[in-house]
Each structure stands twice: as C-alpha cells, then as structure tokens.
Image: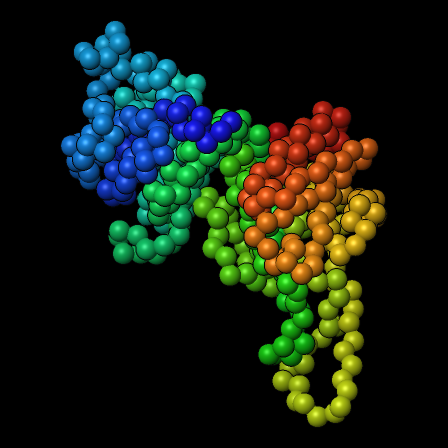
Length: 415
C-alpha cells in the first residue's frame, strides 16, 4: 500500500475523555489531518472541562459529537453511524474511569457505546496520576482490554499536572499520530493479544574493579525496537535491559540490570510467567570471577585478567520444563547461517534471529537485517530500520508460536 493510499483511507475517530491531557487533543487532530486523515472528534461531557468544542471543530473541520441520540445522525443513532464510519478509533486521553467502563462493557455515553458497537481497531492513550496508573484495578482493566485486542499506547514517564513525576503521562501528539497512521497491519491484527512476552536487550557490564568493567558495543536499539513491535501486536511486554541510554518504550514495563548474573536471575524468574521469551541482549560470555575492591593501579608492564564463563541465560530459559517459546539472537562476524543453526541446536531454542555485525553494521547502525532459523524452516528479513525489522520479526515469532502451540510444543502461560 502506498503512502497516499494509506492517507486517503484513514478515517479516524478521536475520543476525548475528561483528563487534563485533553488540552493536547487539538494538536493530535492537527497532526492527523496534516497527513490527510479524516478526523471525527467525540467528546465526553467531562472532557469539555479541559478543552473547548470550538477548538476541536476548527482543527477537524467537522462538528464535535457528544450526544448518544443525535437528530443529525443516521436514524438519530449516532453511535451506530460513527461505529460504521471509523476505520480506527483512538481515545486520547483515556482516563482510568473510561478504561474501567470499557473493560466492564458499560455503555454510559456516546463514546463508550460506539466503542462497543464498532468493528474498527481501538487504541487507548492512557493518562492519569502515577499512583492511579499503578493501581491493581487499573492494571487489571488494561490487561482485560489488551486480551480483547485493544491496543494501549503508553503511558509515558515524566512530569505530571499534579506536580509528581512518574509513569502515567499521555504520550505526545506526534507519537499518537504516527501510530494511528502506521500501516494497517499494525493496528488491526493483534497477533500477540493477551500474551506475556519477555525481551532482553542491551549489553552487560562485568566489573573488574570499582572503575573498570568488561562490556560490548550493543546499544540496545534492536531489543527496544522488538519491545515496541511486540507491544504494538498486543502483547504484555516486560523488557529486561542492560545499561543503555534509551528511554523505556511507551506501554512497556522495564527492569534495568547490569551484569550477566543480574540478567540471568531476572530473566529466569520472568520466563516462568511468559508465553514468549526473546533473548536479544548481548550478554557477556565471560566475566572476572571477582572484582577488586579497590582500583587496580598501573604498575607492571603486563597484567593478566582471569575470566570464567557467565551463566547461559538463553539455554537455561529454553531448558525450562513447560517453559516459554524461546527466541535467541546470534550476532556473527562470519558464516552467519552456519553459526546460527549451530546455536539453534546447542541452545535448544525454538528460533534464532541472526545478523552480521562489524564496522557500520548491527551495533553501529540505525538499520539491521536478519536471517531467522527454526526447525526445518528459515526466513530472511532484508535491511530496514530496526523498528521495521522488529515488526517483521514479531510476525514470524507469532506465526511460529501459534504453530508450536497447535503441535503441543508450548505451554501457554496466558491460557
């Protein structure tokens, strides 16, 4: 589908609920319409306390809809007319109250009713105080909606209107618009809806002394892109990350670790509750057996450093009884296919995604390309941005996961 075709076919219904972040809604509309989308705004009564109807009508070029029964609507039933009209639905901001209403199947106003009546994919951009977002009731409602195929975009972490800082801030209008205008395959089929996916990313640091450590050139960008793609596909994502300079992806739970031992402990614990485990982290194969308590001073002409093997996180997860569907990564400098197939067998994993690394490739690039192997099969993902490659990889992982589940080879944690 060409870019122009994507634009011309975009009929987006923007639901605005009663949160402070509603003041950003006109900017969402502006960014969508600039890209050629038709935007229809539906507001709750509470939203009018935070943003004016006139502003939204001006930027959308369409009357804002608020009433369940509208004399101007088809057969005076606005919720059915709008439910049929929309290609996609985005509620931004989505308050805790609206999320609870939708999870409970309540039809208390025009917006909640049309969300129940539409067949269009629904995306929510949550916005609330950090404590509200962390409340078990809110998290359970979100999990319920994700299991039904509703996509959550965010929330982001940052300063909030209440003066506190934390997770709960609505993602920015530019990010919302980009997500809603992305290829339809990432908005409709929620390939991993209701599934728990654990992803590792980034390097590890193995201490030599208080100021020195052994590490590698992994930036974490590929693993973070996979976390974004898995969340887009509807998964409940836990990202276990080594030291990187990247922000946590919106809507993704992140745990930071440092050493190979830390990565091993966090991963094996999280994998017990996972449907799918994707080991993208560049974990140190060897580490110093102990770290010096004080800085090692420069003295002799030579210094020898003893190393011992680090625990094998990927093989350990793959060997778990009733463990998750396990995907490994192989970064190779030569003989990619040969080494990747060898790792597929030696680690006992279900899939291996292999890539060639070196100068300006893999670790040092914004792009990537993968060769993916599984038992009696393979696929090639050509060079593209890391997010585009991650999206194609997630499609493959979802397909192989479902095939393995049908064959009885995977115990599904979410079942």
